[in-house]
Length: 339
Image (cartoon, rainbow, N blue to C red; front, side, top):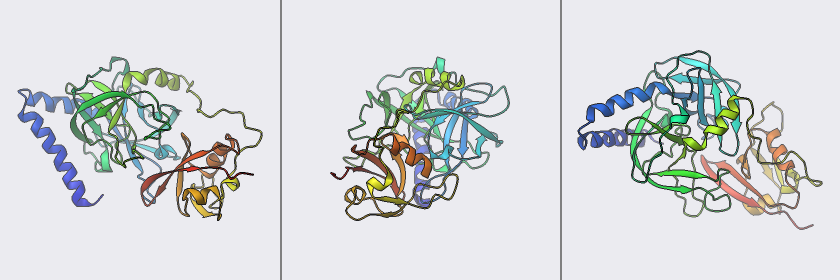
């Protein structure tokens, strides 16, 4: 994003809030709501920073003991995850666990008496409910600045059951589709509240419609996350959707015609080094320097995890890959060559 576009986006957010204040007799209380929510928000810094992959995202506190809810992404694939608080403090966080189906994660920082959202007291909106979206979009709040706030409304409440449809995502459940530009770098994991500051949901990851190239602004309802979060906190996170048992003839990178960068590090990035002519990868348009980030619905963060996920698939199975190219998330379906 250029500096001019960033300024326009920030100006839009400010004007949106000004418009809200101008049309309500409770302008002062809106400021109070925002000031009350901001201390519950955090900025998350971790892996990324190369080839268009942002090294930051958003999260919010869900317990007085320092539990933080956020979206699961490559940003958390780091030996050091740093949490930035509203007052400028920065602490290291531990990744407690992940729910792969919901694509959410729980982090933990040391300390107590944190202001927090109680997931069990989350509100449920209706279509047309006015909302506030709090997030570290574009990573502009690098110090003591508060996270950004966007105003909008719930456009519709629907089910995101589209694994083989327009949106490729493992989550297949209810979402709040928003009339607000929340689908921005760094916004994933932010908090959606009503105009009184009550938690409604968690801002979803960037999600593009593969049919018309439009982006979906949405949030996962907080009440859909409660059980999974309690399991993670108790050390009982749900397993990955892929079965542990390997097929008799597991799929390999060689079967797809993909040669990766040499596996020389503990977490060698999943960059394609070359593609064999006439292979399924070549037919699907995979190119050198593509960064593979998903195998079907499973996030892959290293050479090892990529090989493991492919190994859960049969050699004759179609495989859906999502990859980054020039900062854009793309998708491809690789069909095995007949033997």
